[in-house]
Image 1 (cartoon, rainbow, N blue to C red):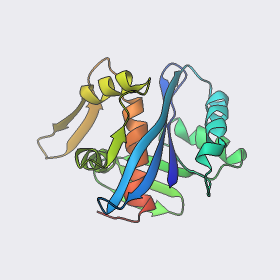
Image 2: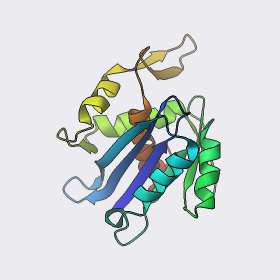
Image 3: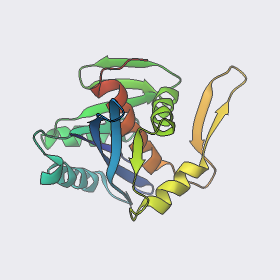
Image 4: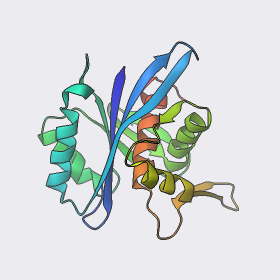
Length: 192
């Protein structure tokens, strides 16, 4: 049992999203699987309140079973400031900078990952039945709406572009996708 907490921080007017997954080896399928155990999003939080929120979740006893949880934070754009503030709180974290395409590089706990790679890894795990989401979770209707409005477009150059439909949000799906990507590629050491 490994808990992965994933944060997609946002600017003041937008939504920040936090997903917590339980990564476990499933003997019946002989592979790892992921269960979404908690998810929330909050709008209009200043960075210090985002940091306090993440710190409270990180220190919950139920997510510190035998080992501390893995904390994964989108450090693209405004995430840089949030990552710095989380470091000053003493939290051990993995910073993920989102880049274009399928690229991947790592220096210690700092990752540079192409958006297509991150989303593709999530979709592969989700479509392969490795991701479980309880439809009775209170946040499920909003997450389902985000998932249904998320689109992939292929450019003339053959590159995939992922984004929410106009007027829709993608913060929760992104927090979940980042957690699954981390479990699949960083935690398990799988490099595609």
